[in-house]
Length: 408
Ligand code: PLP
Image (tube, rainbow, N blue to C red):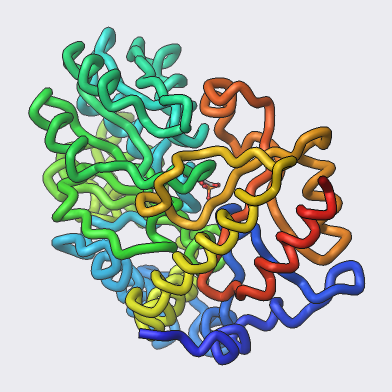
């Protein structure tokens, strides 16, 4: 299936702007995605027509807002192929989702001295929440190493499973290299070793369909803002049995059926899933935006999105492979990667490269991309990173390649 790229780009108002007098070429999509007008309009419409606090009134606006919020849970459940919308907890972002999973597991599943297996390939947001459990709960972490190409060391993974970790926390797609982890092999191994599996899906969901049932992930996290939705809405999927058994992380309004205080002692009756984990006023506009984002992607279809992204990715890598002053990072085999291209340029820092591109209206990321352990393994303190989305064009890639060529 092909995509009408001009029509798609017309849906994204920001893509029409200029930066430093040049048309914007936004190649920093792994940091955050741009938003189509369908998402902008859905959020605008929500505030113009429906805005009210959910689950807190019988009036019409409160009912409409509640319906929209609950529909968003259903939409996210279908997006991940969860069994039930009650397995979808809305949070701010992937970071909060992973902190919620780590804290709930520490409170209700793990004991002092238990081990969590984390990986060097992960973003800090799937490393630090687990490290923090040591001081608070006495829970230990061990890190699976990476290979020199930035992929997970599968032999080390298997060897460390022999230590019988209680939880394995790992990414679906690396935010540095775009490498797609073979979760279909790794999750069964982790389960056989007796571990629960927490997956960071932040860089997976914008690029291909994810099926949490087929993967058999116990928890799966993503951020709406990386997949066309507004900032501030994220998802934690958890298996119903686990979410039912584990305790909540936040306490407050809207997560309780009843609170009785007898003789100074509070007795709480928590609400059913997912509300038990969603204390406080919800991000309803974010949820409405997420619904519109998922609908927008469904309208395009993965069959149209995937080949376009793959072809842009190959064009970028092939162009850069011809440049002697550019060092590409990441596995050679592009078939198990999404469109992330980390690299260094001889004689220039990553931020000098990004600044040179910005001067031409081209946005890319520089730094260690919240993945310092991986950069350390690669022998780098930082890198530049081009990350592509389906609304990018060959012309944008070629403009970027021309500037990179000129830096040699
Ligand atoms: N995990 C991965 C793989 C990411 O790429 C990112 C953000 O770049 C995150 C987690 C954190 O996402 P957020 O900042 O939306 O919580």
